[in-house]
Image (cartoon, rainbow, N blue to C red; front, side, top):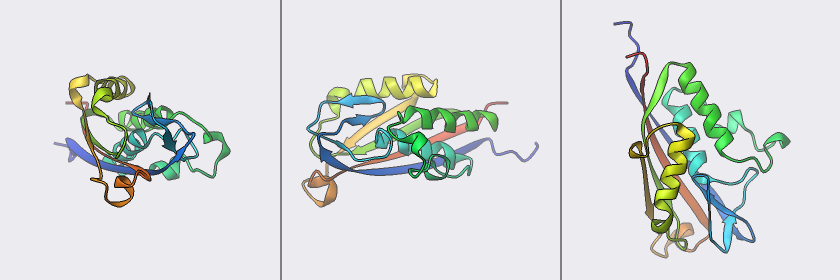
Length: 165
């Protein structure tokens, strides 16, 4: 054994303020909503959380270090670009995605009717089967910033495994 860790876990979170007149994009899917994320990129909090989880699994930094919101080249950028780059780095280190599990905290847009589309989109971006992508949704029960419809919060856990095995 060469001392290489066979499996590694990464956790990512992201939060965006919601505002009228903006698009609400989660997992690469635009959802019908009167409010959307305020962000430098397209504001896809789910893909941002997945990006951070991928990077975190191998201690490769975070989304803000790689794609700073002060850099104009990322203005309006689709968040899939961030996931693809994080995934490229995971693959370059010799690892592959075993699975990803996510939770979307959002008060007013129901995720259930869009869950399968989001799962398919994330699976396609990650290049894995849909059976490796979990998407859950929670409301804020009308409490806190989520419950008042002010923000969308997303969490992601990613398990990567040594691709050489």
